[in-house]
Image (cartoon, rainbow, N blue to C red; front, side, top):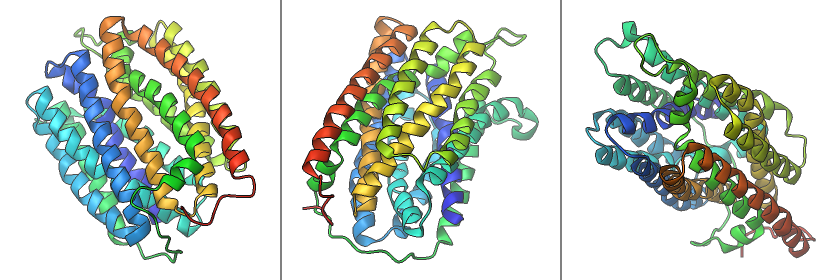
Length: 384
């Protein structure tokens, strides 16, 4: 149960900051393009970290990287509140991203070693993501609790506390028996064996990250105003939480389905959702389409995770590469989102993401056929 708790807590801590950072950057004077750069830098640092430490968790063990990563993430999450301009915030996000990339591959592999179902394990992350989203709305309303702290300080400090709790849980983990696997410094065999998942995931998630970097601002633009005329953060938290909490329910029931079919369903639902967001005219529309969005990510993430875990004896390396793929998308996506939204607008950015997802779906179908022909007798027992 400790691995479930860590998955929940760290997602609470990181997701609250992820939702609030574009808004905070805007308050510090950042343009849409600069907000894209901030998201890109965060994604790049997670990409670097996941590439390095996913393999290390296979070679040297899981527990140490969970402890080290969560320790530094706890400190760096709190320091974000000290940013005085968008560029200092960018540096802070880079540091947090590097720490945050260290432990998820090790945690996924540890949970798999324990025999946890990947759908239920992923559901705990989505539950944490949903609670983290609600945390932003709670902090905005709870001036009685946070006193003289600014909204940014309250959000980032609350996230740091959640990461500290995850760190404490990691210290109590016991070693789990596992088969040690020799993994080359550049795991080409793992990449080739799962190229259909990684490439399609990269394309789809690049489009999604182009949307997410501007989505909090888009939500606020369609939400009611407060009595003073300022933005009402309540609906921001509700819409994000509805998505994430729905994921936590859906992921509980899809483990039995074939991973590849789940990926196809996830990408098809993503297209439908983005088209719905494009035509939305108020916050209620956005709330309605948050539910198919939840189903899309649930199917895509669990399906991708199931597929690579079934194919790969190098569990942490394979999941680390999925983390790095997610992070690579978080490099290109925010930059594209900043450029497209600056040039054309928020709605056009969402439409752009829908087109990219169609490309991802076509790529997955084509590449999966090639992978299955190549490994028709089953994947090798270890990477070449």
